[in-house]
Image 1 (tube, rainbow, N blue to C red):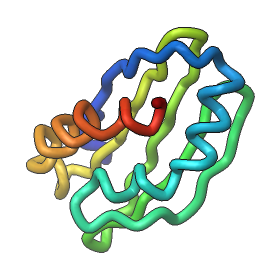
Image 2: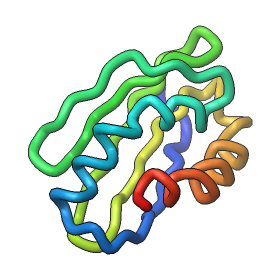
Image 3: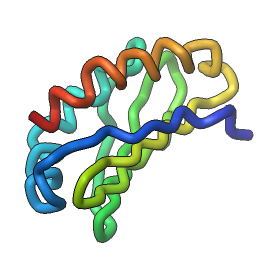
Length: 101
């Protein structure tokens, strides 16, 4: 059973190719935006990066859909971690744009 996903758009001016490059380079930093998070794996499927983070014994499936002017992030927090949703969203809003600079 899934909890409530954390979703947000991160604007950028890099174009898709630039975003793909930045995300590949900064993927390890994404895991640190989830309390106790460690990166397990990531893969591209067209313009969407799917990645999995392990945190507090839970597996968190996430995806980043890239567009010319934004990245749409979806973090599927398991129910046990739903209480961290606001913390995760606040961290994403603060740190994710830095990955795209």
